[in-house]
Length: 334
Image (cartoon, rainbow, N blue to C red):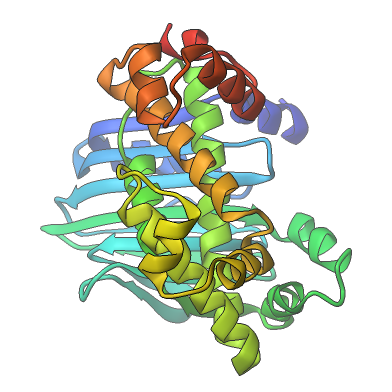
């Protein structure tokens, strides 16, 4: 089978391993994730080295999701030759460590959830040390380096694009980012299995992965902005955090502005500068999202979901839902 056809066959499905993961399974998984694999020395065994849940999914937007909630039950060293890529990692618990191109790395979440953006800009040997009795919960979102470079080069004056381009100037570049409450919620959702159809699950996961990438990039952008611009982003994040913390409560512009201590006009301008949408558009979008999740996971009826999203009319809710997601609420429930 040609490399192209092999790649196409991998892209058609998600690879999900649960319960017991052997060295052979782990190597097979690496074969799905990477185009070049350096297999470990010696025979591959079928006895478990990991137990838990490992979810790998290729998405259309030139990204790959890798989410794990695992107990490492045996010492092991995984190896692969990794092609150039930029990866967003959120370590929720434990740590991932090993070497990249012979240099040690440690993505550490032992003192609380921690985010990392790490870029590998040429093919090199990657190793991952698996330590007996370690519990690791993490989400990785891997972007093709050449695809990302094409995107950022189309916006040469954008400060974030300049920063992302700078990540490609060294063979290996690792940067920390501070996960928001929203980022943590997205990561937890990517770790959870769903009863949705595979097609809907893939759509949902791709949307969440892109949202999580946006969170990481926004955090990096804030750390590199001029002080006055960073202050605007901080205020916008404060507004969004208030909405997230009170999503189930009655909210309007006056209530939100009072909650964050800003004038309504200032709040609107600040939020739109950072998120390119109005405060109320964001609120409506988030409530639709919570209603969608409740229909999928909790079995809410369309009328109940409409009420949860703040709509008095199920038909108006259905119209708004289809405009955002491209499918009707009844299709989601079925």
